Length: 139
Image (cartoon, rainbow, N blue to C red; front, side, top):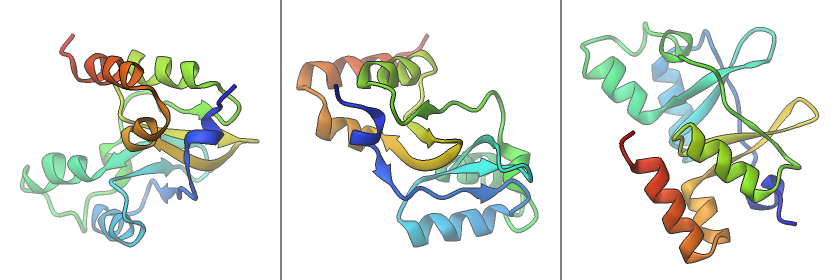
């Protein structure tokens, strides 16, 4: 059985909820990623901030990224998957919530992220096509 841990990109990092969006963008550049899980003071995930969130919800809205925090943009229930979850569970979580990135948690610690790119390297063409159609279709 292939697990989330088998297909994830290891080494994901949190960004504190109170950190500003300009710092989030800098960290994304340093790590060469397009998304960061956001953690509160209790080190529990509050959501994910993406490069698109920063551009659309902050910069394009005329806000100053040095004054807006990650917590200001996180919304909804954070989604994640346990490291031991099988690939079908990963796909179900991502399809069901139409998300393109999924944090992987092991022993209550962030251990990695699964993105579309990770799926592309580990799924058959048919499974990948089904995933893409379900995530990008308008409901």
